[in-house]
Length: 266
Image 1 (cartoon, rainbow, N blue to C red):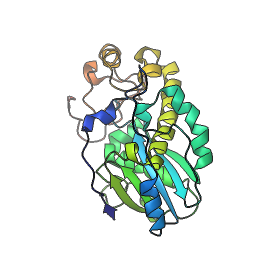
Image 2: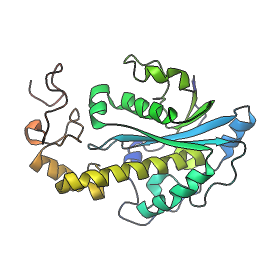
Image 3: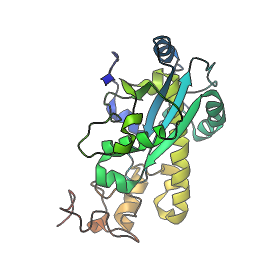
Image 4: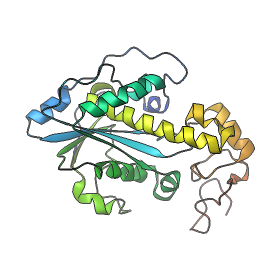
């Protein structure tokens, strides 16, 4: 079951543009615990804030962070904001405080190959269910950033069937990463975890600039794709400007498995 509290619709593509990767943090109003406290007072023993990172990146996995709160959680760490509004160093500094504050926390991920095989939303669901699978005990509610519930069961692919009994009720809220502290904290955990993965992969593929762009489609990254082709860590089902859609060190993940992807010759 999914419910959507009233909220204004923000600019959709803003979520794909980390606003502080190359500059100073943006001054914003801090998120609050009003929504979480109202839901806990309404009968939920434990709830989680959930957010994803990497949705719009042509390379790398998607990560989903989960921060669980109960009635005993006190004041959140000072400085928690949507991860896109913080510098990388600020995000890293906040992680220990978030982990100490939350009653539980987790990060799940889905690989580029899973994004290609399942589609983006189903891969997000798989990553979210992997995060939920790390949490002990019942969780009644999840506050999900955005308008669309990609977490709940019922999709035709059967993704995460073994996790179905663990999926709690989902409440969607547009821009929850700006207004709900648990969701903002989850975005920080997911972003720090994914950044570490991309920095590690940059050592294997140093010419794509992943240590700086984290797999997002910056002009320099797209130029590298045009020049060098795709790696196994790119999302091959996307319309990327690679010459001949050739992969480096591995065949395209859809090779020999049904029709060619859009933009590819059969």
